[in-house]
Length: 269
Image (cartoon, one colour):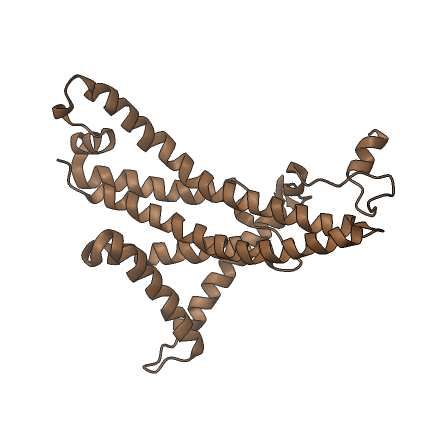
């Protein structure tokens, strides 16, 4: 490795000391395995996903294991979160009659995604697991399989084909073109954008936090100290902003999930 390359990733150096700014990049999302079992590498993102699963399951088990008529603090928080997803998302999108059966799934998805996002601002962890595309893609695949299976179950093969392709003879000579793009959009682009929307937002947010955090340290030298203070202020601002984005992206993920299910259950005209 050249001296220039070494200096570009030097973390113990400050401005005016002859070293380059340690710019974050794709290397910031690659982690050495904590341990390896049969060729499977268990690394930090997987650990965070596992912890997210344990925390979400543990929280709701503790909140509702022994429910009381007059809820305690933990049960009350659990009920507020559950009710927010049930009434604010599922019922609003699917209605009460159809939506009840999907509430557990959407509550699980919302809090699981939210927890994976929150790791970004938690000391020591400081990494959103959803900034690794495999995890949003896996969750989007679950929703995709559910949507496709519900479409065929509800409408049969012919009805599902019409539902997916937007079949409408009244469109005249352009309807084959519309069918092609609807088919492409629903079966290929939809699951892709569902995953990428979550991934891209958390990826970009983490990079921005890294830039301002590293800059705060790098500028701590001479006149650069004044700029370091501004950079650290941006870290605080970005952290607050990330709190909002983390919850928003979890909300958007399940809102889209519900809208896809609603489309599968809707009658084709």
